[in-house]
Amino acid sequence: MAVTEVRMPRLSESMTEGTVVRWLCASGTDVVVGDEIAEIDTDKAVVGLTAHAAGVLEIVLPEGGSAAVGEVIARLGNGGQGAGAPEGGEPSAPVPAAASPVAPRSEPPAPLSTASALAPAPPPPRHRHVASPLARKRARELGVDLATVSGTGPGGRIVRTDVEAAGAARQEGPHVGSPRQVVPLTRIQQATARRLADAASIPTFSLTADAQAAALTGLRSTLGELAGPVPTVTDLVVGAAARALRDFPRLNASAADGGVVLHPRINIGVAVETTDGLIVPVVSDADLRAPTALASLSRELVDRARRGTATPEDLAGATFTVSNLGMFGVREFQAVIVPPQAAILAVGAIRTVSGAEGAVPTMTLTLSCDHRVVDGAEAARFLAGIVARIERPIELLLPAPPDPQEDSHDPRHRPSDHDVSPDGANP
Image (cartoon, rainbow, N blue to C red; front, side, top):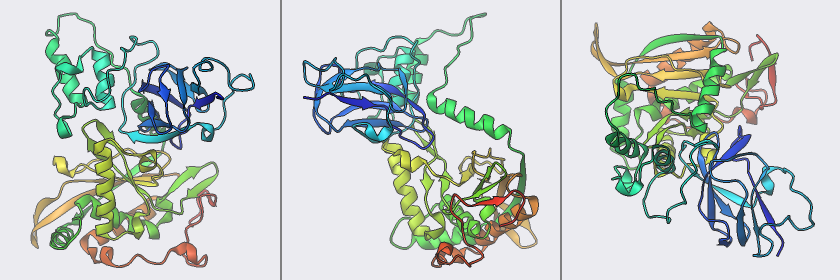
């Protein structure tokens, strides 16, 4: 039998390397096609790898180890060839990720120990303790035995907070003069830190406006009486922002050297809180979806995120972001732009405001923009367009306008990602 090399695949757009969180099979295991053999941490999610070839597994990269995309992390061969070179005797060389005999199955982001961390314990029998990847890694970091932990997640699943609570219960109170604990950043946190560092260099300005929300909440109540999923306030704001973006393509753009990249699709990232942390699934083509369709897709994305089955595709490709902290009673806030996007919309809680018209449900919207891409006047008109659609949400029920790409003469035509408008020029 020929030896098949298992290489580190590219599992997200920005991935340059990955880390083996856990091998699900030990060296010497007879693997068949379809067996899940490892969990790989990318810069966006923990992704399960499934064998597309059969053979005896030889692990090359240990748990906690990192490798560049295309590097060999394991081999599949027969019992006599498992430790040998691939057929032909040539040494391994990195190749594109497509050559890897694996297929992704994604899980929520999980923390990683570095290669110099404590040696990982042998993996426990599968399904012995139902725990998220993040919880398993945190347990190894804190030295917590999962057998002693009670899960509070869905179906009794052990989540990160359960492990940390168990670890805290074992520790004595703080001692005067004791050293501070330094918690290493996970790969996801490192990627986020890099993006935030990039965001710090963006010349940002913010605009704030109030929107009367009575019509929006009324529409939601009406849709709740019909069959199908009920849109959340976030779903409806996403719909309003997406429709407004069709009229203001520079808000659906990215800064580039000497110009601005205008994205042809309107894909809106929406933050979702899960038991394992915060991830941002992407509602693709949000401007083409009715409220119930937005609600249906959002529910699927949230369900996959909370079940731990979100795919890299679920988390990639956002061109604009909506962040809603209203459920926490936050009135207004400024969100940090997610590079390379040009803008982000922060949504506050619906509150009652007394005025000449009486008590009016009102929400505050704050738009933060990259000044290299959009100026204040255009951003103000865009924000006003969102407010108008929130206050008169009937447009969200109407069929989406024809795709502007079908008519290159349409003034709303969206260029391809390769079209670049000169810096400072209005499209």
